[in-house]
Length: 204
Image (cartoon, rainbow, N blue to C red; front, side):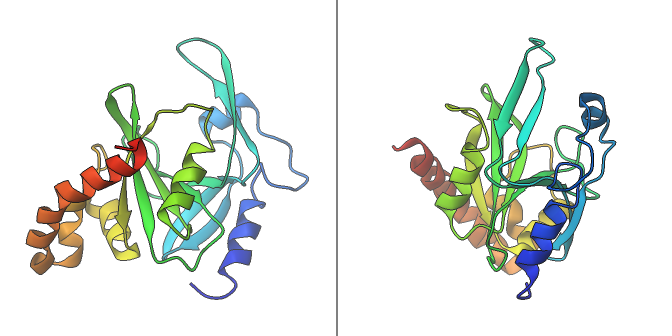
């Protein structure tokens, strides 16, 4: 990414309805319908819509309990335009302050004991910063982070276009992104990568 990528992403983050500007804050109804202005940026050559900038608050109403929830975002939050994730909406992403990063992390988010959806961590310098930004964007004690899969920009582009976005991602699923020669090696590493990630998250 070029040297002004950070400035472009920051400007895009604050160009939407939740940014630092004179636009009115969207209502709950507008948020549910997605009927409000978002910022637009290109990351790894992929179009990204930025709904809210870092340090802003996401809020909504739990459909099961009727109670309002609020969480403060530790990173810009948006989605990949033109994709369709497990929940029927575009695949979500968190965007950090390090656009020169050549690594992204795909989070397999679980609710209860079942896979829920993916959250992609973009523009973070390392695993721990990405993990922390995700957890710090939810309420204390959030248990949604089931596992993370490290991906290159090439793998990420391939997966968003060709992968099964309705199931949890594993390293083995990315084999085709690097060509047939890498498939066997990636499949052999998949279980080890998964166990290592789980060990890092859970501490055992």
